[in-house]
Image 1 (spheres, helix red, strand yellow):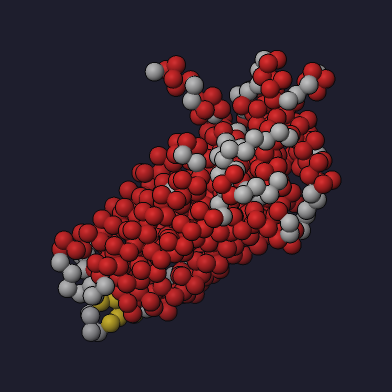
Image 2 (spheres, helix red, strand yellow):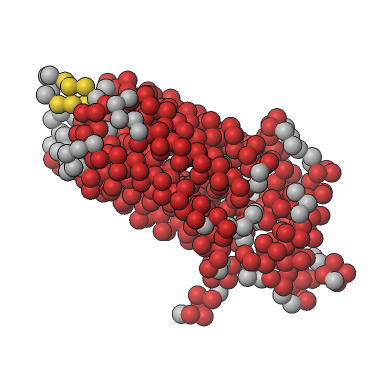
Length: 517
């Protein structure tokens, strides 16, 4: 059994330092999940409703009005967009490592503004915008940093950390809200807000341990530093010198033959196809209903008639988090296309099933129908957690060329969050008007996602970032990517990163004796 384990790519290419760096860098993703989760759950807290809501004499209950729910949720997305706009400048000028400090600063300031909003709902909104601007920066920085640090054979598993910690953050926020629900003072929700400080505390405490991205150092011409970092990250240190030289050649080749530096270059030539892939998966990730699940699930369950919607929310997010463990294997085994195709089909089935069950209204649903709806929502979140949750970030982080990676990720994440803004603003009104039928909309977008994957999204598993440059520039058809044999510098880099240790392996990788010396 141990012999089989040693043959696994995860065992061969990962080490303790690389894993720890992946976990630390993923704290921004955890913050993203926590911020999304606490807001959606806090809307159901009695003290939060008393503080910022209004009393409805007909129902004899306090509730947050739809306009405040819409603004509070939507402005969070606006903060993310602000962070996305800042990201290409911050990550390019300061580098990946120092960008973690900027992210931490924004989150600390935002939490202070939120926690001191004793009476003003609009101060709370300003705090959310500030926190979410840090989250917007993280949504660009974290997957970019991880894609540039990860060995190609396990890049899918490594980038899956982003979605894993996003889901973990969502689960922890719902659990925190659930555990604090019996408090009868304002700390019922304020303790949840303070928990957001965990992310910047981890970043600041572990900052000295985080290295700069080796590929960023190569792009900036700091080759000796890049080699030093790679020797601390990778297991196959005997080939690091050759790999740095090949990366140096590849960067020079790209700058000479395919020079691209501006945002507009993302829409020119073969880069347009990359941009469509990156933006497409991010937009469809949102359009299939994840914002609905994360922000409005508590209100939806209350509409279905559940007396303890917070407990049901813990069940939904907990199951969604637990299944993420599978993604550390599936994306590098099954590939990106197959994983996301299965996911879109399953998610469409669940959303359309909920819509069909509630199409005649939610007031008189039987207990079995209520339980069926919750089961389908749990299954939806589980399917999302092992397919589109990580898949959207994996694809967006790896398809961009090195010269435009910051800008491609910026456009992808902007596409995601620009899509989430109208969903977050409009969903409360649509959900109030048509109740469970709102899920028909999200299920329909899953059907669109199936078409997008089949015709547009290529297979990228097991390829180095440099191999993907060659494949996109060769203008391959979508279904030709999986079996294409690369022959350029990218193929040689992939072989070295996998450990071309002996002379025969080096010759197969295409490295001459002179290059090796």
